[in-house]
Amino acid sequence: MNRKPEISVIVPMYKVEKYINRCIDSILCQTYSDFELLLVDDGSPDSCYEIGLAYSKMDERVRIFHKENGGLSDARNFGTARANGKYITFIDSDDYVSSDYLATLIGMLNENDADIAVGYYSDVTDTATLDAVINEDEQKIEVFSGDEALHLLLASSMYLQMETAWGKLIKTEIVKKHPFPVGRLHEDEATTYLYYYDANVVAVTYRKIYGYYQNPDSIMRSERSEKNIKDALWSFAERAKTLERLGKTELAKSAWLFAYGWLLEEVMKAPGNRWKWKETYRDIRNARYVKLHIKEKAFIYMHFPHLFGLWQRSKEKR
Image (cartoon, rainbow, N blue to C red; front, side):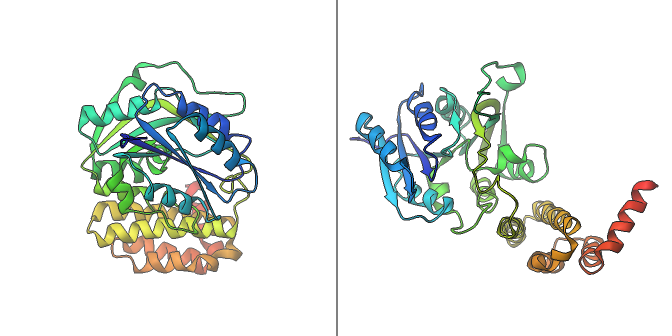
């Protein structure tokens, strides 16, 4: 490509040869054409690189890279460092997008002078695809400040829509400022809130333009491992601590309540494992913006989880 494209589309690839054609095809048939597609083969042992290489020979917008395996965060960071576009969008390699995905998001940015455009998603399967029906609610576009977008992320039913790195178009300068934490799961939760913090205007649509495929082979879909839980709690606590440091009092309170809720759920599911999550407990106990009665509850269920369970059940009977 002789000039810089408006958008860089970044797709990390690892063990997705069953799905990657569907993903790439959905990107290359976009109604908006001013983009580059960066395919990052993260040391995949299957034929992902060969598939991506074939596409790069057919379409000059496709750039294919190979690197040693470093995980999703590392692959996204690798692509981000090589992105030429003014904006970046991440698409997971087992997902796919509607033909007007890029047109919708870039239109939202331009029409609202926004830094981030957020699209809605639809759960898809091997047989169920994106719903083409657009109702009145889906036509609506709402515009928020960065702080308002953070409130949506932390205290609403729109958590998945707002929290994920995919399904969004973001100014490249913002993405490059906040790399994903390498070696961690739940990397989006440790990163995307910082995008909103740095944004002046965030535009949100309820149109289902992103097909979210729940791959049964994905790490995040597999049985919840100790690392999965540990990284989730770490991400939630880091988010809360950062907002606390930034002086975002109300946002920090919401973020700490989110971390507290997850810790409570994990302790109640497996009381015997509770001290594996002692770092999160310590963070909650030391947090500036966690109310005393929450800290007291955390103390009770970490030290006396069965007593806390009895107390909870007695409350429900009242």
